[in-house]
Length: 479
Image 1 (tube, rainbow, N blue to C red):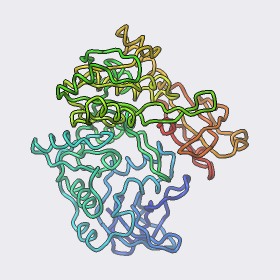
Image 2 (cartoon, rainbow, N blue to C red):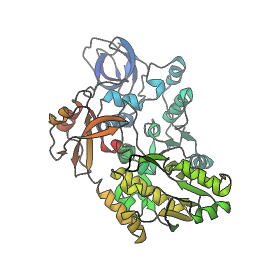
Image 3 (cartoon, rainbow, N blue to C red):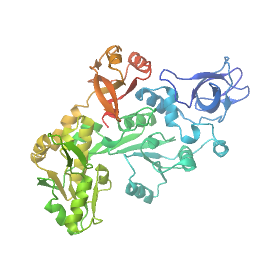
């Protein structure tokens, strides 16, 4: 901490800005106390915005003066390292990463009630745990709370409640933080354990913010805090360890596999439904597809199966749930699960999607009493028949051994003119794809070394690409 006497500070503004920007330099008011991590107010392009001090110098001059909001470091060194990690892996500017990391209450100048909370520096040092999960798991969160832990459920907190929750975590009052991106961004003070539940289904992307492969980055977040990290994947057996490392627990098949042909309801499912046992039908929605003769035919999905159940049983009983893969949440033990769309796993164009499907299958095989699957579904069918599902999953994992960066631009000519330093990286030919319904062209940079960091020269070239170029990890395009 410095007492200013001509002191200047490098400040990262909390705003979205182009990829090649890091910070601006401001004068510190004479007599003010400020240091790395302090929250300040700065003038930027004619308006006042919040910012965070990243570095200070004991002497110097700058054209504009900042206003100190917290003399203590609101962002600790590990917080700032996390934001730098986000900027590196999100291939975005430091201000953009900081904007994503900060709570909504601090993405603009703090209100009077928020400023009141910020007056006293936090003092807590409670041992904290992070539980990353793909969606709300009310049973799991309730179980953590039942053990006497104060749990922050970041899925549900909004508005002022979200700020109070963020501040309680920063104060060290919260022992367990559960959620997805908002949990990963939490302002821990003493993070000891990181638990990642179903990592094959965790990703994060919002428009105009960096995409972050959160599950892949969990070990780096844990390393920042010198914490332990564990994964709970439903990939079969050793395939989970091959994908997520030795600190990973995979699934062990226990369910009886029943082979079924056709789209009619399986007899085993109907018998279980009539007996009042928990049943699940995991499928996609009904879709219209051309039949090759100029007509459309409806491929059966959720809506069709719901009608079939009602016709067979006279109603849709509570013990029968029909849904997409989200219906696997809190799958009851001893349930009967029909997966009529299972063959879509091997037809997926992307290994991320295929692995997610294999993890869903592993979840069912571990938890359910009976798993009803379609006959004749190619390599998946053969692997299940031969008891070699783990081998099939390992083959998919091997496809992800390297890293892939995706570069997209709406004009193919821009891709043909693209030149980036790519030592150890292979630049592909552009291909036309649809991303969120919009047609664009995609080029990939790939490397076979999964541990290789993006070299400074390559990163400099990537972040210098002007709009409308977009750069992201390939995982985003697979979702």
